[in-house]
Image: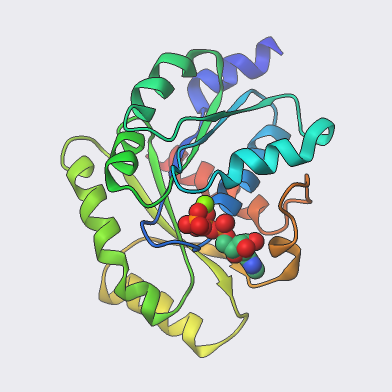
Amino acid sequence: MQASKQAGASSGVSVTVGNLKGGTGKSTTSVYLALALAKRGGRVLLVDADDTNATAYSWVEMAGEEWPANIIVQRWPTLHVGRLVSDNKGTFDHVVIDTGRDPAVLRSALHVTDMFLLPMAPTMPEVARLQDTLNAASEVGAIKELDLAILLTKARAGTRSARDVRAHLKDGMELPVLDTEIPLSERYAQSMGSVPPLGFYGSVLSEVIARKEAR
Ligand SMILES: Nc1ncnc2c1ncn2[C@@H]1O[C@H](COP(=O)(O)OP(=O)(O)OP(=O)(O)O)[C@@H](O)[C@H]1O
Ligand SMILES: [Mg+2]
């Protein structure tokens, strides 16, 4: 226990999961990431900061006894989420904040985490909606170092659209995109309220940790 605490002090992961567009896989990503972190040991603070729907919070409630004891969920859908996290993160090794559609809440969360993970489907309509989120984040990025990484979710394996969108984001827009993609699959769509196997989110966490270590 003590060893994991010490490791956490130096290698703790803190991530805001955000995209101002709805339904892009933010809550699913937040919950799986918290589960992946908890599996490696240490205490995880999972914050549900979405003021319109409390998907992450409800997920944990539905899981009940099955839910790992080392992940504590808090529902803080407020502009003060950043301060609440700062005040409480001392007893945790890792922090994951799930956000919703309010840019001010997103900014508040970004102020207190190292990484900004942006889930989106690899489609041109989702690319077209990206700018609002990037604008909101850039206000925080101007003040502090913020490691942005896009996570392609709900990807249809091997399709041209996924490849084209990845190339457009990376080469055209010069945005960082994780190598791991989360496939469009019932296994993720049906997992709400359970403690599912990590699937591709295990690789997402490995990439998140590698990015942190490279900084
Ligand atoms: N990889 C996936 N494959 C298939 N369905 C998925 C996948 N990831 C998420 N979903 C489903 O897509 C829907 C939206 O996912 P989720 O709630 O995680 O997105 P969100 O960005 O948090 O949405 P909101 O903006 O409404 O909070 C859910 O029904 C979820 O089960
Ligand atoms: Mg959500």
